[in-house]
Amino acid sequence: MRRNVHEVLAWASSFLRAHGKEERAAEWLLCHHLAVDRAGLFARWREPVEEALYERFAADVRRHAMEHVPIQYLIGYEWFYGRPFLVNRHVLIPRPETEELVLGVLERLPRLFAGRRRIDVVDVGTGSGAIAITLALENERLSVTATDISKEALAVAKENAERLGARVAFRCGDLLQPFIQGGQTVDVVVSNPPYIPEMDAAVLSPVVKEHEPHTALFGGRDGLDFYRRFARELPLVLGVPSLAAFEIGAGQGKAVAALLAAAFPDAEIEVAVDLNGKERMVYMTRKKLD
Image (cartoon, rainbow, N blue to C red; front, side):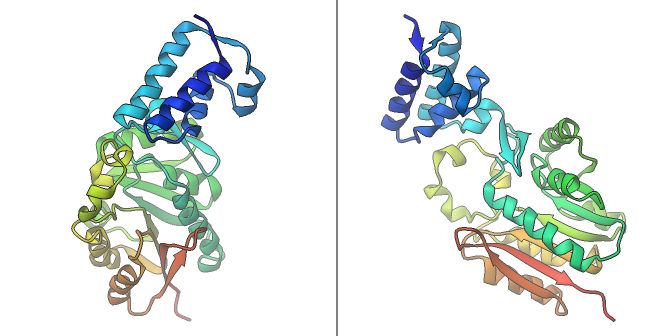
């Protein structure tokens, strides 16, 4: 039986809806399998779908609906800051909220480092490399190094850098330890660390909990373990002037700001909200003394 695009999409949407998943995922998957954009999908609305392609598509629909495999892992990429980033089970799927963190860093750099030809930036826990690569491509003055404790994640990030033409250095290590051990100082540290409290695991979507790497999700009992470590390690690597920028979880702004204030009494600390009005970023700025 030859099904056309409309019929295939109608079946998939209904199947996903019945399993509590978003119907829009069917459209996303079908665009991927047909190698078309949304306009191209509707342009082929009445065209027949080859049986082999339909079987591959249907298998992915079932994996998403019944095994909770994220769509991004099924198609192999996610868009971030207008660019496609390869993703797999070894890396966290980039989120739109993290784009706001990157934008916040880019907006603060010209004021803080006016006249500087080179700004040394470290992206800690880089995962897919989305933050590091985006910063490197958006500002040519940045000398970016990306770190991760996972060799598998670094392999993904390196491939993304090569595919997107970004000049980024990569180092395997635990938080800022590679720089502390090497006696290096840097200008900017940015990170989207694990910040979900372990006690919240039970309420997470199975799409996240069962497939994305737990080492990139959970930040200890209260979600603040990595921020505590940053508060201890940042004074050993940040020069003056300098910027530290972090993504945070819901309700963590005050606690993260307090940790940074204790480590840097002379710093300006800002808790920023995202487009939905939720606390999402913390920026710590140290300005050069006159």
